[in-house]
Image 1 (cartoon, helix red, strand yellow):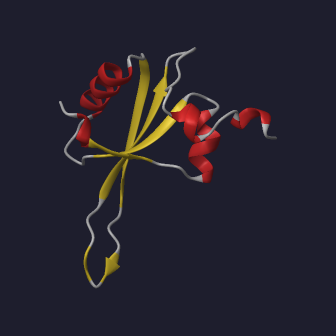
Image 2 (cartoon, one colour):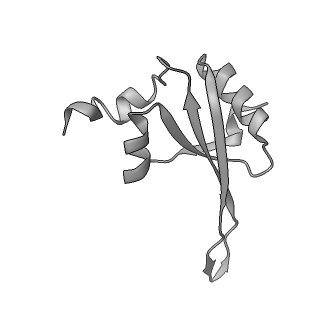
Length: 96
């Protein structure tokens, strides 16, 4: 499996709230299954994944065509964190 199958990290108001409970939201390749997403995250980031939830976002109508995407909410095992996100949202729990 290749890392380019993870399209991007999703940064929204809801996903930032989920960071505190060790849940991270990614847009992924629509052909990936939940076990494949789990294996990809575990092997690349060296963390244990306790659960993966997915849903498909609808495609938008516009001039031309935009494709539907698949979004994965990855829950890490207790004590796990993704070091990449410390740079994106530093100390989000202390800003309240």
